[in-house]
Length: 246
Image (cartoon, rainbow, N blue to C red; front, top):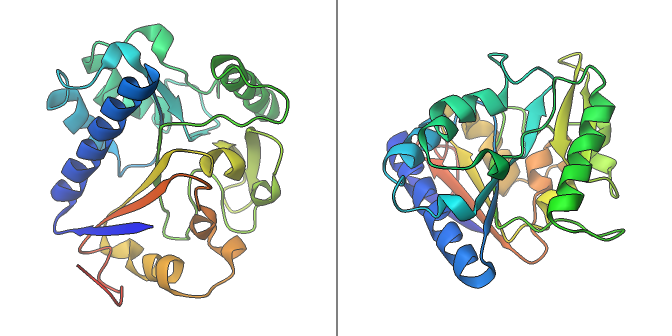
């Protein structure tokens, strides 16, 4: 596990953009394509803007395939949609083919059916056999102030899922289901990179990275790639409670 403390949020997003470019370049050179799962929430918005402008001519967009780590159970036009945020800040501004973008069909009123449909999309794209799990080149994640990541919330049933790739995870405190990749998928990636910014995340970041707390209560602790890299990109404000800072 690598923890990198950046001085400002802007430096964090620049470092994250460099990670995306590096992962894409390596993946295309080795396997001919780059698969990335995008995060939701507000933190990655600046990263998407950076990629749309600075990396527009650098990234191999024609061989880049976009997926999502999780999605709110809303239509793609909804202000809360993770897809909509990525579409407005990045996807609409780059030369990527519509066929390279795999959004979660969260407009389906049946959340479980939406999860199943997305799982089938993954199985088809990655040509998975029974029991196989997709291996993403890069999965970007955030961490909530409660320690959740993707839409795996503390105490939620989805933390126990071992066989499904995508689930509709009921989040009791929000009184709604969220569509999310499961831990086996997140931990199969070649690289998982967390983006954490702000003083409101400081106490939780210390708990997740430095304290011997029950992982089921702090799902971000459960992200441990089996054979891949785990990188935490955090700004100084988020890292302010950590014992060791660089």
